[in-house]
Amino acid sequence: MKIISEILVIVMALLHIYILVLEMFLWTTPYGLRAFGQTLESAQASRVLAANQGLYNGFLAAGLLWGVVQGPAGRPDEIFFLSCIAIAGIYGAATANLKILFIQFIPAAITLGWVLIT
Image (cartoon, rainbow, N blue to C red):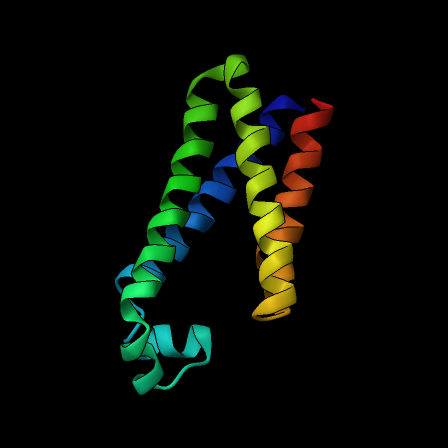
């Protein structure tokens, strides 16, 4: 069961690396515009803010991977970063877009549950 929780943590880290790439590098591309439902004009106006958000997603991914690399000693780190992601998912769903609940909160909550029970 511990292997399942570590795989889930790695998947969450990869998800946040993907979000980093979207927000930092693909924000104004057709793919980025489609992913976030924006016009080119609004994306260009918010490009710097999106890059900043992307960087934070990278830090979340790094924290999760750091927890995995540490083995059992990294469990508190995994719990902390998964909790941060879950809270951010709730906030994002409430303030920005409900789909964030399904993309960020639910996967983080499931992974956090697995980490806590193993």
